[in-house]
Length: 493
Length: 67
View 1 (cartoon, rainbow over the protein chains, first blue to last red):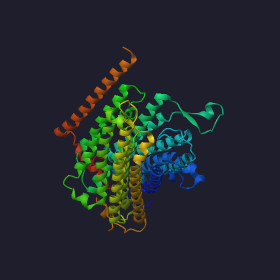
View 2 (view 1 turned 180 degrees about the horizontal axis):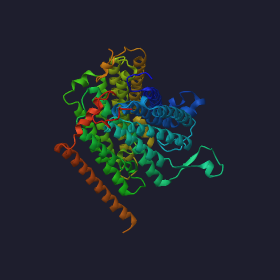
View 3 (view 1 turned 120 degrees about the horizontal axis):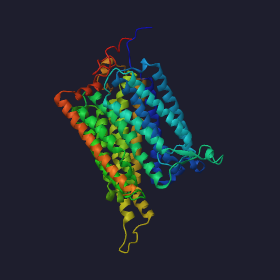
View 4 (view 1 turned 30 degrees about the vertical axis):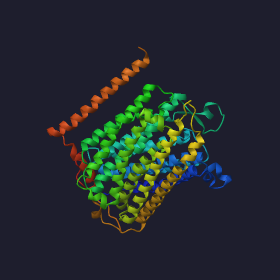
């Protein structure tokens, strides 16, 4: 055999990068369509009366949430795993044919799942559980994908050269274990066709839990899907990419460890805040509130650690759009992990629950933190996996400012809309009669819904700029030498 | 005492126990660093020196390269 020097193998990382970009555009495009539908209901018929079944809000909404969560974000997590995992463990995928096969199988089955999910949701096949919409055959395929990823994680760890697992690896492991546990328990379901001896559709199922128990398990899952899908793996990314891009080791490794265990300890108990003033036991609601507030500590532990990593190096934020993306991401992380606990306080929740403020909160977290960090990670990886400089720095800067404006328009409009909604719903006269009917709130909220749609559209425009920049980087940018890839990523003008 | 009350006490006790564990861990991290038993901060370099040819911060085995 030839004696080639050992190199990292990014084949599967590249595939997942591509999936991240494509699924990101799909998920956000659907989101933007939904936002315009909310402002102008006529958009429900954008493809004509005949196709209204497929283009109406209720059919598209799960497609938006699931493609952003399980499409864009998961692909981003896996793209970075197949990059960061090798590098911090100092072992190449090329060293194990088995792990390489597993990784390719991981991608292939995942793609089958993606097609099945998009198809089934468009056809209206759904369990009806938010973020757990997939029917049982897809759930089984998801479990297979997850098990393969787990084998890939622990397989790579098994052949590593670096003895200690870098903090990011801990976060990736937590993502794997957390989602595995949540997904299995919340998707316990009985296929009705088989249980009833042949009645109904073969793919249909009902949840194994019912009533309040179903709600409890669902929100234990729902909130922790945010924890282990939108927080933990994204923290894994920033702990690697920010130090690497800036050339500064993480400010305090000890703080990163204790923030990790703090997050693991606290997050799992906070889901009850989705059920405040519902039929679950009062102590559980209080527990959800209290743990949500305590959650500020470990979240800010990581975020402050990231900001302090830039200590003495703040000129890099001005100079590099890539660092800008990451610093804004960690700032949005601080912001949304403060906003969430505020909304979880019972008296605030009485106003905020079911309003657009919640929608605003989710989106400042996902657009500002999750998506910014994933895009920054992909920008950092691109020159290293394609051996070309990032095509255009000015395009990156343009994207940054367009998307930042988009996020700001999104969450400010939803704040105002949400609080207005909450206040109007509870307003009453001196006899206790409600002051407004539901349609009164809809009329008042219309301008804010329009502003939200504009904000979402701006963010989507940024996604297209991102996709174009990545495409040009991949195909026609200047080739770079290994020596240019040490820390700050090379970028064309 | 009914089962609900028992659960509540058990839950509180368990939480208190985990808080103690977490704080002990923090104490352990900082005291180990101070006494020089273990330098946790060096692990931050794992992200910076991450070429496959770089020397690991802590090698898993001296014989690892001999295959």
